[in-house]
Image 1 (cartoon, one colour):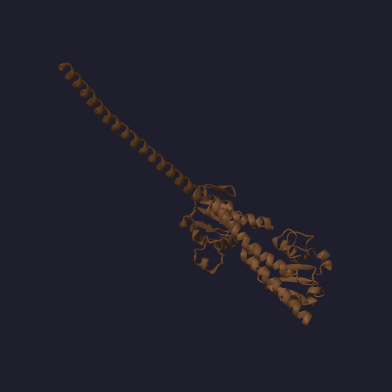
Image 2 (spheres, rainbow, N blue to C red; image 1 turned 90 degrees about the vertical axis):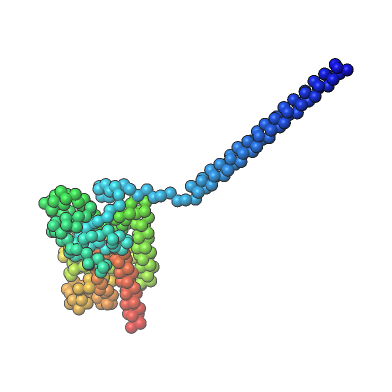
Amino acid sequence: MTKHKKLLSIIALVLAFTMLAGCDLVDKIDSFLKGEQSESSSEAESSEEDESTESSEESSEPEPRDWPVTVEGVLITEQPQKVVVLSPSLCEIMSDMGFTSLIVGIGDYCNYPEQITAKPKCGTSIAPDVEAITELAPQYLFTSSNLPEEELKKLQQANIEVIVMTPAKRLSELEKLYKNIAIFAAGAETGAAAGEEYWGKCTELLNSAIEKAGKIEGVETMLYLRIADLTVATADTIEGELITKLGFTNAAEKYGGWTYPEEDVENLSPDAIIADAEITENELEKSDIYSGCGAVKQKMIVRTDMSCFERQGIRMFRQLLDVVTQFEQLQSGNTAE
């Protein structure tokens, strides 16, 4: 009996121990499972965050890489803040592109756009006013031709970088000029895009002029007369190229340097003349050179402000479109008569 009781006691202890061990094991398993779920949840959240970050990075545009840039051999490490522009052409183009705020001083002949004329005058490329320029403390100076050596040295000693951008002689050079100005002012990527946009607006106007010119009949040769009698747009000028782009033959296409030779005037007989506004029709009618040509006889003469062409900004293309429109109107009037 006693042995039986002892046996029962041992069995009870074993059962109790097993139950206790089982509870602890269950707790451990439960804890383990919860940990696995927590880690799994964390991994899932982390994966979602990574995907969200990747998606955000893919959708956001990268910042443009604008600086440094090199323009006409000059390294520019950051966006310019203060520029003096002596060239009327460069001044106009910079203003057209929206960079007027960078200009702190201008050349004596910079007169367009009108709001730019309030800026301090700083001389010309031939005779720069070094004192006026240095007082403005610009980082850069823009000019379309080389400065005199003495003045150049003084500006360099004042830590003013001089950038020379010569006028374009071809349309391809003009496109490059626009882009260089924009890259100087706004950086490699942003500036290049601004330059392309500006050039795009100019080419739209040019294409409109070409389309209109195609409707003008009976005109084969055209002359761009800058100064009477023989200062004309020759083959090496952008004005001469524009005549060709319109679909006409430049009457001075055989020559260069803005000069038509006197010994060949007997062959100068344009069907149409673009004349400077200072040249009157009466002057051409009395001219020994032009009185007998088709342009004067048919009154196919358009007088225009040629400074727009010399400045080489978007105004040049607007003016070209206006000139072609006037020729179209003149021909319509001649036909009606």
